[in-house]
Length: 224
Image (cartoon, rainbow, N blue to C red; front, side):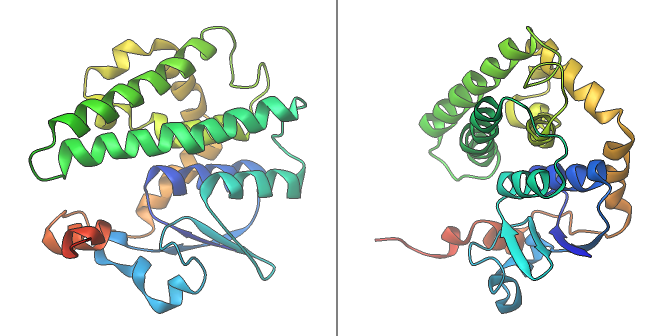
């Protein structure tokens, strides 16, 4: 059985959706990052980058969410686009663009100390630009790789649920095609089961000083 190390953040949730869509049996193993469990020696032994998600499948360890999606797709032969180059391009676009810029926009808007105006403007602009590219694409077709639902749509769903947190509560109005896509994926039974993971474990909700140090270790260190 696959061991799945997770919390309810965007990247683990796309893997939860993938596991459910593919009907793969798995054991969910919670990692409470606000408590700093990702920095434990036991977890660092499986992912030295101290991040979730991670899966262990038949003794093989795979980390980085989009790498896991691709691994599971190739393992099962499910939810892969026939246009492999197109699929890989958009899968990596989500990995290298949507995730990092959205994450940094959230960080600088909500957690960074002052002064931060330049960083907020920079990452908000880039997040909006990247989301706008996906909005335009989904205006031309139902799914990211055409008419067929794929692992790229799962990768996108992980993040698109968080658009109001990334860009503000009014932001969804700017992206009607993304909202249509989000609603369609969220209505799938596998997505409902993936979201139900929240009922299996109570993660720390408070973003207190201890949580900030666990999530953003640089706050406790001065870099020369």
